[in-house]
Amino acid sequence: MLAEHGPDAMIWAGGTDMTLHWQREKVSPTVCVDIRDVSQLDFIEVGNDAIRIGAMTALATLERAAGRHHILKMLSDITKLMCTPQTRTLATVGGNMCNASPAADLSPAFVALDATAVIFGRNGTREVTAYDFFVGVNRTAVAQDEILQEVTIPLPSDGEIHGSYRRIDRTVVDIALVNGSAAVTVGIDGVISKVGLGLGAVAPIILNAPDASAALEGTSLADVTRDKLAEVAAIAARHAKPITDVRASAGYRQDMVEVMLRRALEDAITNHGGKLR
Amino acid sequence: MTVLKVNGRPVEISDRGDRTLADALRNDLGLIGTRVSCAEGECGSCTILVDGQPSTSCLMLAQQAEGKEITTIEGLADGDNLHPIQQAFVEEQGFQCGFCTPGLIISAKAFLAENPNPTADEVAVGMSGNICRCGAYPYIVKAVLRGAEKIRAVALAAE
Image 1: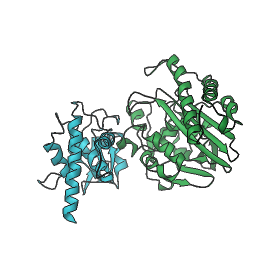
Image 2: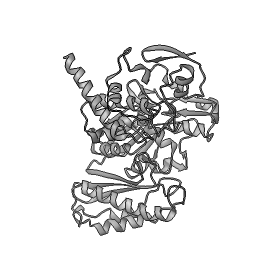
Image 3: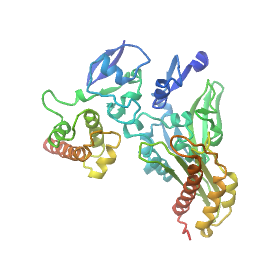
Image 4: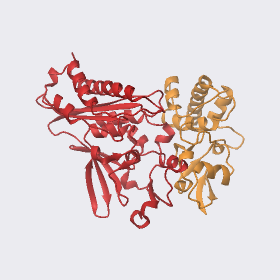
């Protein structure tokens, strides 16, 4: 249908962002492809090597999945910051991804967790990393004749992963002024093997920071200090290219993204049982 | 025509694809108890139940409701007998101007279905998707707590 109708056809998932875009005349579709009730895309699957979340999983469903895995608990806590209970029943994980707001709440966590987006098209499925999924404001790697099928979060085979998400807002319904997420994998030898970072609302896309991640990788969990995490957060914050808008100034965002990342890293280390000095 | 099931009855709305469910409920069906204030999914005035789940009807296309069970404020009372939550809002004066009240009562119904015996703090979080511009929040929390008591009493009596 998408291929047949071309750019005038738009996918309607939960519709909570699309209805607003349409009412504000940011989009003017002639055909809405309603995928809300495609139950094959509504699933959360916890495996040994990955957690798979279907694109049509409602935020309210993700919110209720907290007990199934500690990473789902992290994502569940994020959904509680998003919109309102009665909008979370409509809004979907895939819709939130595809709307590609730079201030989206789940996206920095998906980037930090090194998640993969599985995209379905006429030639089957293809995968892109969460980092590469976001191309610009409201723009993603999904082509006109494709849809997002699921998000896959890899789980380590030889260790454990913990993460955290931090943001600045005024009230619960607010959009994040700035946010940051961290995910830290510690091997069975007690050494940090992988660090993922996601910076939100400081660029048109969700940023990562491979140099900052590398600065922490290879460190023993027992050797991690608050100063070390502050240094890592400072390296990561250099990637930020914030703008001034109605919500916050560029300078405030630049300062705060570092604080958000530092706190997210501290949370992740603490969740591993690390003692911060 | 598109057939919706609203408050237990099949009803017809036009096939227009360019309307929200809130508009269809109010304009086609005359169910004006569902209020629209912000029309952006922030204020909760337009909250209805879709298959039992609280949903902002201002952010749903009318056609997306096809095949679902819709409950609006008009579907809560049993004839002249108010729903226990409606009765509790009257008794605790959980409103001032009343504009937001239908949305609050529907939200309370969904919240209490999931948490039948909440604390006041849990009520405040559970009802956080509904804004009352009169600021009647302390009375609303009391009304929801009293509604919970009434529903539990009804359930006990039925056992």
